[in-house]
Image (cartoon, rainbow, N blue to C red; front, side, top):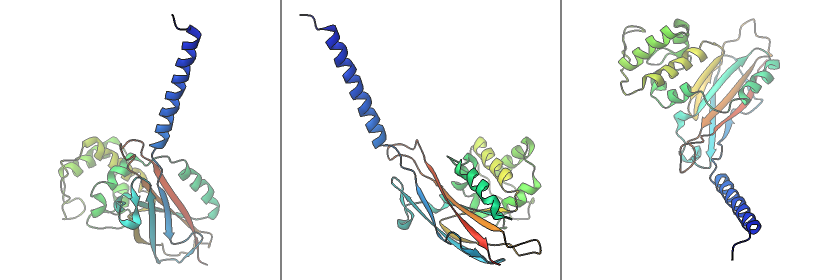
Amino acid sequence: MKPNKFFCTIVLSALAVCLNTSFAYRQKWFENSPPKITITSPLNDDRFAWNATIRYNIKITDKEDGSSEYDEINAKEVLLEVCYLKDASKVKNYLASKANMVKEDKGLTLLRNSDCFTCHASKNKLIGPSFELIAKRYPINNNSLERLTKKVMNGSTGIWGQVAMPAHPAMKKDEVREMISWILTNNSNPNISFYPGIEGAFRTKEKTAKETGKEVLVLTASYTDHGEKTSTQNKKYGQHSILLKAAN
């Protein structure tokens, strides 16, 4: 007896629906959860004093990666961005631009996974010059990118003093170029600073006659997780921002 063509069509359609539903369910089940970032100190709407040290602490929890409370998060993969705005009315647009970020700049990711922050800071001199000084000396163009990429890979001395920068021959040229591009693009603004780590401190600027008391600091902590448990694909980026108001 030949099977009913109509019956076979129904069975095949039902089977297809079941398979699609099962796939979608498994996909949802294994979907990477985004990290939760919280700046626990200072607190939102706190007041900041001029020319003062502010300590910060960041908490990271991620379903796949773990928790910063149990040292399961690599501290150097966490970044705090501090932005000084002269007027609180500018906060809305600034936060809107941050909210549109769905992933971290590739150059910054590579930078944080390297040893660069060991010798360089965003604004202050450590062993080597600050990123701000580097960005001020070298314009963002192909010549600068090529020149600095070679210095990072081959090492150099005498440019910023007698302390030698070690060579990094294991680094890939295109990745070093991405890192240099981020440094030159993001560190020329004197009102924005970057600090790696789950905890640390930064210093506020000195008050001048130009300050009116309307100034604010926007602190944004960010972290990109390592993806799903069975795959490093589908990494998720998370951030948290708070606002600090100038003390009168």
